[in-house]
Image (tube, rainbow, N blue to C red; front, side, top):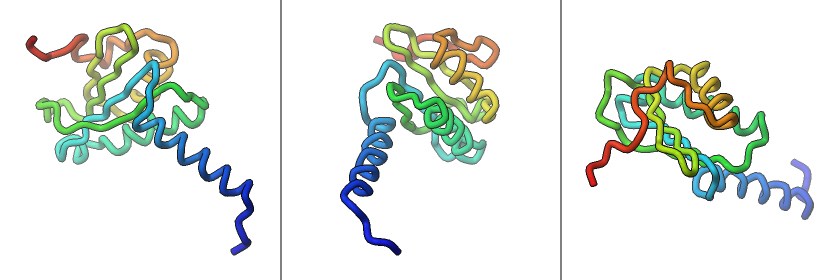
Length: 127
């Protein structure tokens, strides 16, 4: 293995910082993939991978991707919630990687939610 140079370390640091920003940073959009055991069994890892690939492919830097536990609708997994700054969250259900990519392009990038895949708009919290 060749010796690392300072430039190599700088490149690695930038790559790692970008990965951390995707998980923990601030952005104009947040994607939460529901990854309880039911979600994982239904394919949530594929959905997570699709969103992360779209971020990488499109060189998007202002979108956060995170996970949560089960949302309580096991029969509708895999699920994801998309939140754009200033807009109500949208919960998407019965996802596939193709649907996730369409949601990314239409909702995250273009700002229009994909009604065909949406279960609900807004928060389910009682305040």
